Image (tube, rainbow, N blue to C red):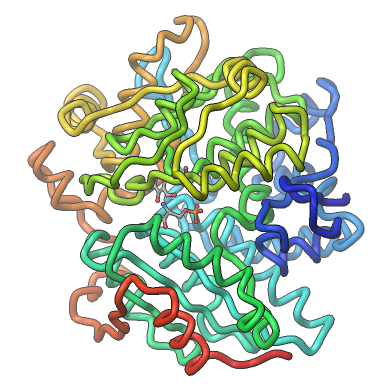
Length: 466
Ligand SMILES: Cc1ncc(COP(=O)(O)O)c(C=O)c1O
Ligand SMILES: N[C@@H](CCOP(=O)(O)O)C(=O)O
């Protein structure tokens, strides 16, 4: 498979190349040159496969020729062997129509583990073929950070610099990152929002003074390999609910648009999907874009679902590229306009293309709390605030009652114990292996929201590769 940039002005790369590159050199995001497509018979034949075997089937077209089938299988076995549930992403029934896909059984209790456990292994695999040293620079609103750190802590020839917005992640999320004291892990709390951190990360990819010396890559969902691994669980859930002979809808708590874009990819690969529901909190740029065509970023409002406190959603660019006719030059101009003014209007083609599969719902704090309480009262399930936003959207999106709706449960409720306790009266416990999280020593730097300060920190703590 060959990958091209959404902005049309970067070299096409193979899978190993895009995995190590992260972001394209023209500032765009890599996407496959074309979508691989399964026939209905091929999808039907996936029923009953173990998660690892399903992952191999779904991802193989994306990784060849950089990886053989056996290499992919070995990497997946290692990655998913670390999950605490035999099904990796178990599906639970809420009622006649509503289902919950639990994506938080990995080491750091969020859906990010599904992709990052694999990505850490991919980095190691591809690095073994060269003598390069990799510098990962990432931004997190809470969950990507710990999952990425868990995936690469202690690995040779990799440093990770993870930026989180100071005071805007939950205390469990922060401690999951800052108590990992491996010498290759560097946590940085910056003044500002996740969007500020993400903008600094993207800027570093285009800063020749940095890229000339450091081999910088990404662990955020701007890295194609992240999204690819997330496609698998859409297949896993749909197959259990009668797919491909029955359509399924998915409700996805959304911030950076990575998880729900993976659902879009599954649909392009032939999986029959009724609707993809983009569930946002009050940071609702995506809801406004999908419902009115107005993609304009306001200020970020802190909420009890902090991982979704995002206004600039990186992966939306991938959708705009695909539904807008794959015109890299036109998209580069559109994105340059957005980067200047933080506002843009979707074209008619982009609006109509998105409307064919996506529905959006904005969920405020009260609706989120009610969804948490409903799950507890009616189903005995404690869900986290992000999942609750997805559940609320699933219940109000107006999906045909004959179609199952799967809400993606993106985080374990114990990561957000205070918010869950406020809504349900129950305080979920951390798993035993994390019982001492609050006794562990923390280490992180605090920096102003200033690119030069972050770049200087990376320079002084990183390992030059070139
Ligand atoms: C718990 C949780 N739910 C939902 C999201 C939103 O996912 P995405 O950014 O892929 O849209 C995130 C962060 O990405 C998250 O950490
Ligand atoms: N919600 C994320 C923000 C980054 O998203 P990513 O999927 O692009 O890494 C987080 O928890 O860090």
